[in-house]
Length: 340
Image (tube, rainbow, N blue to C red; front, top):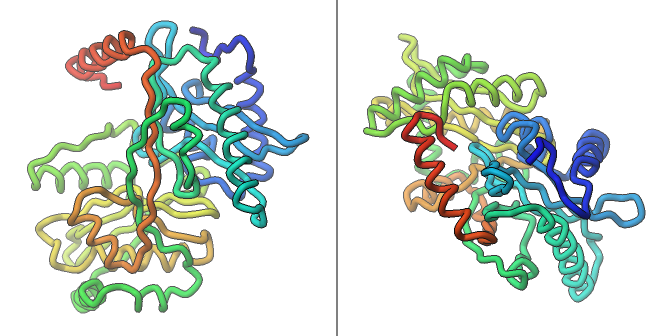
């Protein structure tokens, strides 16, 4: 396969260029994970594509996807640090229910038809919390795994947000302030990565992403003013914790947290969230913790007063034999130190 996606009936190269222009000019309702600069950094500029649905000349729907090549075929999967790609629909807010369902079916069916002109092995991708109807994918043979994110939907009143925290979270903030923790921004990429590696090692775990990938997304976030690190240190210079948060005007996402277990009781993690929300309150609409299916983590996010929101991860196998061999190749790459 050439670097460009080759389809006998749909021009993915032209769609991609049109999508880049759309995001630059009118992409106010998409998420940071769907921004071309983010996809270029996480998947690579030659490893993502998009199918568009238009009414007249206006884009009213798209299906965004990232992929890995295996010979002449591709597997569609969301890349590291990308919670979702998937579907986006621009629906009139006053549509009657039956017209809304008809619109969703029409758009999603057309987008799937376009994507299925590609030589697919399998598809596994998540969709944003705005996609509440995956039934048209079910009718096309897809399966679903429902996951949950946690989101504070309105950042305009930070004091109100703090009051919505559980009493335990507010006590954490009080403790952190009593310790005189210093809050700062722009922890360098290497220092953040080294700290995360160290804090995971203290818990018997290994870091799951490369220094090179983190440097790439860190640089992208700072170059496009869509991400920052925030950290907490004590008077002796010990780093208690740090966050790497990304955003666009639609929503911010708490992408990576590094919390030193030796200082877990200091309350730094909670104070960092509050101070980052304060910083973002005039830059974006919402703050998303990205969610987790781990019980303790989900309970912690809920204590920030965040709303639990379901989102769908849909999957379909198109070529089971090729899927098997692609997994063998992945395993060999991992053993060789490459990864997918």
